[in-house]
Structure formats: C-alpha cells, structure tokens
Amino acid sequence: MSPRDLVKQLRDGLTLGQIAQQKGVDPNKVKAAMLSVLTARIDAAVKNGKLTQDRAAELKARLEKQVDLNQVITHILSDSRTCSGHCFNKLRTPHSCG
Image (cartoon, rainbow, N blue to C red; front, side):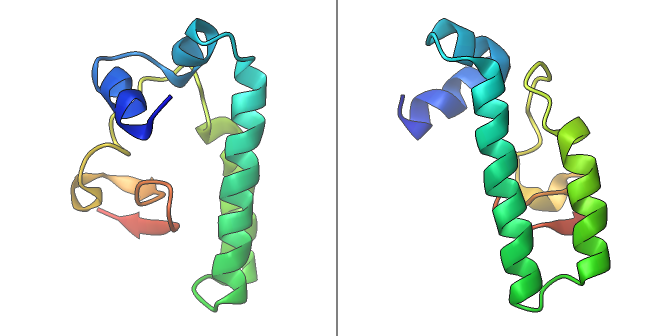
C-alpha cells in the first residue's frame, strides 16, 4: 500500500486497525512495528540532545496507550502547528505543541 493510499483511507475515516484487517495484516503486528519505530525515534532524540532521558521515559511510558489502532487518526494528517497537547509531529520527532 502506498503512503498516499494510506493517507487517503485515514482521511476517509478508517482506522489503522481497519486498514490492516482489510489488507489481511494482523493489527498487533502493525502496532508493534509502530511502537518500535517511535521508540527508536525517541532514543535517537535523546542521543542527539533533543530530549532528556527523563522526558524520553515519560514519552515511552505513554506510547502503548497512545498507539491505538482503533482510533481515527486525524491529528497526524493535519499541520502539526494546529494540534493540541503532545504529539509526534507527523510521527517524525516528539514535541509539545499547543
């Protein structure tokens, strides 16, 4: 599935879990992959001096709950400047906006 097709389906209101099931992919594998990527990005941010170790630990502690494949994702598709609270800047780097 191309990134463009994925974004279209997300914008149409499907969840990542629904998309995974439609494609015959175990949603738990998708979640595990997402958690792995996000954890690696948090670790890289610590290594590059962009996050403290304490802040990274806070973010990692919340990842399991935040990566919900049954939730409609709209905020990673919008401009990160308009999101409220803590977000992952379109899943690239952790930051706090609002």
